[in-house]
Length: 352
Ligand code: ATP
Image (cartoon, rainbow, N blue to C red; front, side, top):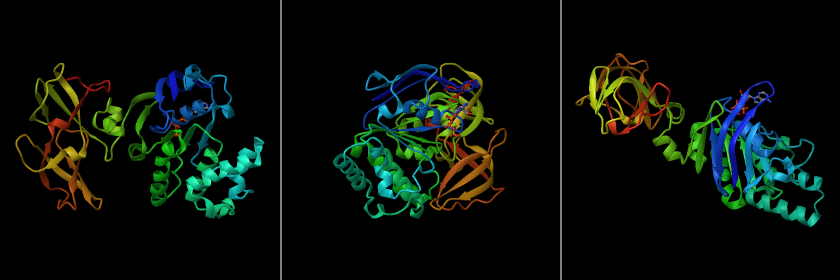
C-alpha cells in the first residue's frame, strides 16, 4: 500500500504544486488521478517515484517512510505520454536493458523478460526496432519495460494520450488487467475525466494542488463533493442554474420546483447543478420554458442546448436518438428534482 500523509510540494520558484494532500492506494488497486492542466498530477507521480521530495508531509510504502529511499530502490515502473524506448536497441534489448544494467544473471533476465512477453503478448515484436512500431505497440513495450524488474507499483502519466481511439480502448483493457496480473498498485494520471471514470477502481480529483474528492467512479459522479468536481466529471458537463431556495421550494426563473428534502437553511441565491440526463423535454407541472439554441447529433443520442430566461448558461439536455428539434423552437424542460445539487458561493455542496 502507498500512503501520502499531508504532503505539500512547493518548488524553489514559489509555485505550490500540491497542498496538504493525503491519500492511500491499496495493493492491486488501480487509482486514476484526474484534474485540469497544472493541478499537480505529474508532481504527485514524481513524488511517489522519488524524483522529487515533498516540502512537508510523508510518503509511506507498506507503512514505511520512503524519504531516504532512492528512486531505483522504490521498485516503481513509470510510463509516460511519449514512449521512452531506446532507438538504437531492438524491442527485446529494450526489455532487457534495465536488467542488464543491474547485472542480473542471464537466467533471471530471461525469466523476467519471458514473463512480460507473455503478459503483454509481445512475441511478434521482439526483433523489431522502436521506429518500426505503431504508437500503441510502442506503449505496450514501454509498459513491459516498466514492469520487467519485479516492480510493486506502476505509475502511468497520460500513457494513451498520443494514440487513436481504437488503440486507446485496446490498451485500456490491458492496463485495467495489470493490478491483478502483476500484483501491483497502479496509479494512472489523466486529464480526461471519461478515461478516469472508465479505468479506475477509485478516482482522485485534483484541483489546484488539492484533493477535491477521492472515491469509486460512481460515487464521484453521483455525489460530487464540490461544484468543481460536479462540473469537471461528466460530459457534457453538469448544467448550472441560479435560483433561490426556501424550505422545500426552489425557484428557478420564476418557476417553483418542490425539493425532495429541505436544506439546512434558506438561500436567496443558490446555484443548482443538474446533469443533462436529468433534464427532460416536455411540458409538465413546474417545467421551465426555454428556446432551443442548437442541437448536436451524437449518433445514439442528441444534445439539445436550450436558453432559459434569466439563466446564465445554456441548459444541455440529452435526448435519445436524433432529436426532431429546430433552433428557435420553444419547448419546456423538466428537472428531476431527486437528482439536483445545490452549491454554495464557496463551491461546497449545501447540506440537507
Ligand atoms: P499537466 O496536465 O499540464 O501535465 P499537471 O496536473 O501534471 O499538469 P504539474 O506538472 O504537476 O501539473 O504541475 C503543477 C504545478 O506545479 C503547475 O503550476 C506547474 O507550473 C508547477 N511546477 C511543476 N514542476 C515545476 C518545477 N520544476 N518548478 C516550478 N514549478 C513547477
